[in-house]
Structures are given as structure tokens and as C-alpha cells.
Image (cartoon, rainbow, N blue to C red; front, side, top):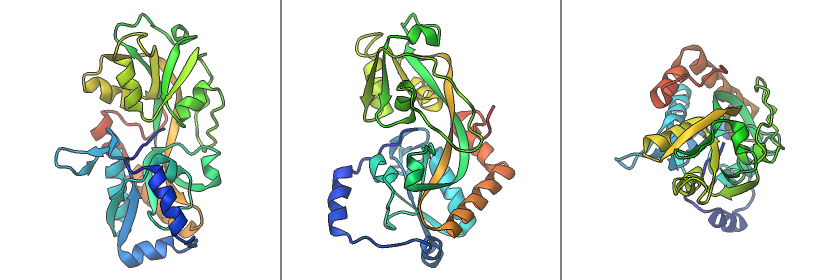
Length: 277
């Protein structure tokens, strides 16, 4: 799943030249508990997962999940918004402690990040313009389909998606795109699709809740066919602190067990996405 931020990767890249590499392995939990603050990376423009509300405050499902994790650790939550590329690159150097950003735990990402807890599962679906004649996934074969660059949806359309998280539902590649167009964000792709059926795009592949949020915000779109796959979405941490990962896993499991995650999913999506249907 894709998350974007408004702080550019280039700014962070420049910063990395000036910041010495510091080893935080094994020290994250100690730092969080000592400072009584858990720093979370998030996205200010990815509703309903995370966004700036009318009061210019961070809000959304992922934000609520992050706040609940911090609460259960007995610390305050601070949110920052680095770019998606910087988050998934790992080697955070203590600038933030965890990402609750609807991240799919792919094999490639697991080389630089840890994924201590899956907190929900989301169907990856296809949206078409409301005037499209497409009625099934087969109708999208040979069509121009938009996706966010670097997302699991792009990998799916390229037929090289690898999700090796425990409990990941099996999937098949049911669409042969004629052309895959990559966008910086899902919203950019929706903006092109809303121009008309086939004007720039024939369809967009994205998370079903993100598509439904766009429709709610008056984008002239509709969902076509069954989901391409269900992706587990996990809390991500930088590599090196098993004790911190264990605390995160414990908090998220408790949120599963006591119904907190299900309630938050119902609040933001109107359905419980915290288990595989």
C-alpha cells in the first residue's frame, strides 16, 4: 500500500550527508520509555488512513492506531511526515520510532525494516470512471491502468508481487494491463481518471477504502470486479531492537483481542478489516 508525505526525499537525502550514522540497535525501547515519547511517521494526505483534518490536526485510522499503541506503552505520541521513500529505505537513525502507515510487509522491505505486527488487511481493488463499460476484471485486459509508483499495486500489475507475511491470502494475477502508468500518489491517479473514461486512464488500482473515500468526495468513479488481492498491513520499525518490536507486537495483539482495532476499523471504514474475510 502506498503512503506519501510532503517532506521531500531530497531534503532528507541532503540531511543524511550531514548526520553521522548512529547505531540505535537495541536502544529504541529504552529511548522511548526514557523520553516518554513515541515518534511515528505518517502521511498528511492519505484519507481515511491519515490526513490533516479541518482543525489542521492529524487524524485517521492509522493515526488512531498509533495513538492507541502509544497509550498502551504509557507514552505520548508525536507524529512527523517524512516521505514514503525515506520511510521504506530504513536506517531511520532514531528520527522516528515506528511507521503506522498501512505498509505491506514485502520481502524487499523486510531487508531493511522489521514488521512486528499486522493490524489489518485491505482488499486491493480496481476503480473505473462511472461511464466506463467495464463490468469485470477481464474487461480491463489491455487497458491503461494507473497506480502509485512503488506500490504493491504496481508490483501486482507487473506480476512480481511478493508478500510473505504469515497469513497472507493467496492470489492470482487476473488483469493483463496494456499500459501501467505510475503516479506519485493514488490521488493523482484518481485525478486523471476523473477526467473521463479513457481520457488519460481506463482504470486505477488502489486500496478499496481509498477508492471509496474518493467516491465519497465526489470523484465520478465506481469499483469493478473482485479485489485483486488482500494485503496485510503492518506496523514497521527500524531493524535492531527485538525488545521494542515485542512491545509493539504485544500492544497490537491486545488491540486485536479486546476489539479496539475492530472498532477503529468500523469507525473509519464502516467494516472490520482487521481479519481476513
